[in-house]
Length: 78
Image 1 (cartoon, rainbow, N blue to C red):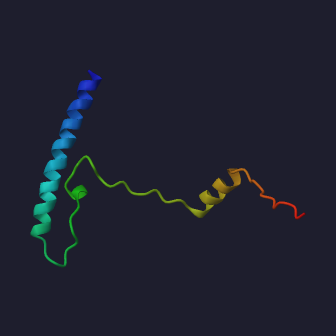
Image 2: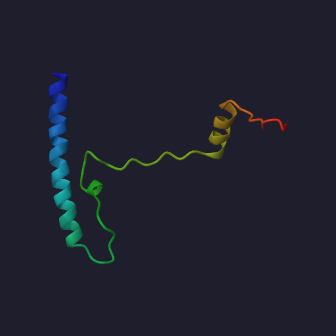
Image 3: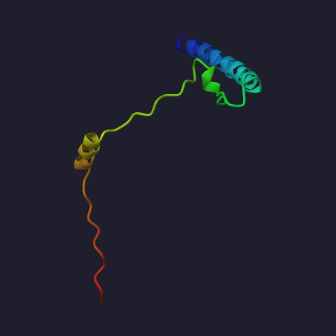
């Protein structure tokens, strides 16, 4: 049953892929020159752009403290 649900969802996503492409094309044809170009994600409900998570300086320092430090030594001169 789970597989049938996955298949149905993929069919919906495939149909939305095609519809979003057509809507994007039409919107870009009829937009003004000053307006930004439309993207597929503007019309596609399944493929939205996820915001990139930002990291703060304190979180970065915590990550650095948790990493092991490896020292590289230069080879001895003969």
